[in-house]
Image 1 (cartoon, rainbow, N blue to C red):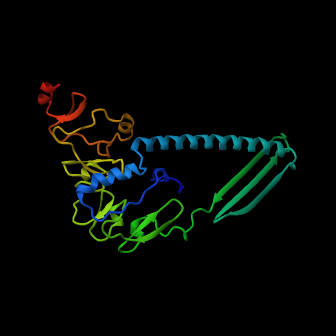
Image 2: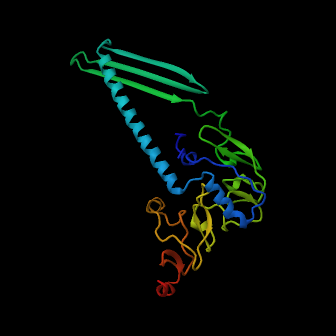
Image 3: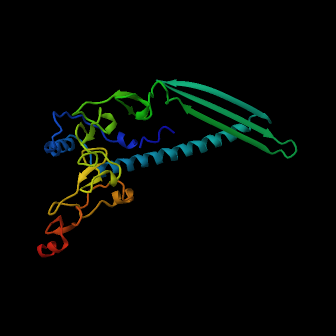
Length: 283
């Protein structure tokens, strides 16, 4: 059950994070920093979806193999049942240690024969549990489990409380930053306001009217991004896969729409945010 958010994960584990250092969170340097992150190996959102799709295919194949193995085990059990006494009950328990994990297996076999009809009832129960979850390896589940000026650094197999981060340090959530700092464009920064450029968001209502909640190629989480102004480039043909996955209008987008009162229209060979009337004469 703890495997679930492999795909908060899961999904996060698909992309290798790269640590970058900055001396100041000057907004003028943000575009250069983001471009550097992309150049050093960050993937696009579409590539992330392709990785997730491949993972799902691999998972489906493993499930099919598991079902086939269970069918084989059932057939083998039925053949072995003929060699057992007419009435047989047995339960075995084994424990195997693999590295720092404990595999506990329970096998229960029951065979009963009706003396009058000769009918045979046979069942074989096989249960295997893994000791991957260990309280010693999981100090916390949420940030509230940790004390003041600390946050929960959570992974699938381990989690621990970590001290908060000072300014200009890499972050993935506001709780990682000390005091009243916010995580802005992936860096802890002071004197910032929620809803402005680069602040983390989950819904469109988390951002100001001049911004929208959208993903960025260099970050693994959505942030408030400025909506394109007049004559600025815009995305005229949205990613259909993204639109299907993010059907909720309040959820994060892949690209921000034009600012209020403008439309993304074709002007020559490019798409720009324009007044509909003004673009007609320029086409």
